[in-house]
Image (cartoon, rainbow, N blue to C red; front, side, top):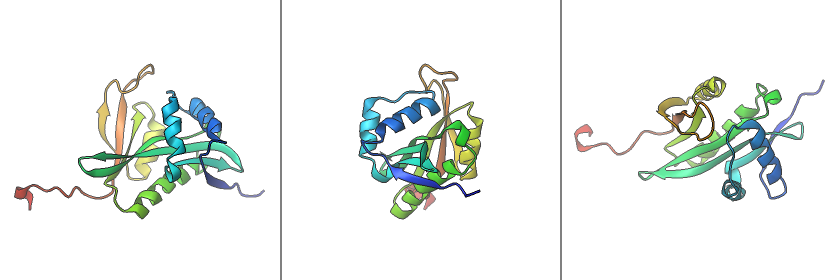
Length: 165
């Protein structure tokens, strides 16, 4: 038996429909046209995951700036259920981690996870993410509506007050 290949590929206008369909199947929320328009401009921050040349997952991120610090926000990272536990999610997250490491100017990576999605919470914790906040009523039209904010700190805050110096 040959070993399965897992590869990441760019999101293009030609495969955008595959990303839309994947997100519809994997996530309980829907994304609007602006989300997909922005994804086409995201470059390395949006990737499709292929398992033996079949699209089975995707990761989509954006850069946020808060108080002068750049943070990477993982908008979506998901894989079709039959292909989970095969290293596909890890490959996508490692791509994101390599991106921020190579860039060198990110304070943190963060994302929202529905509070009852224990498998996702456990997955991110394996990569050093921690629950830093719970937002009530974050999601609309799905239950539970609350979301945990998971974050991985990449470098400490540089804005020490005078008394801490």
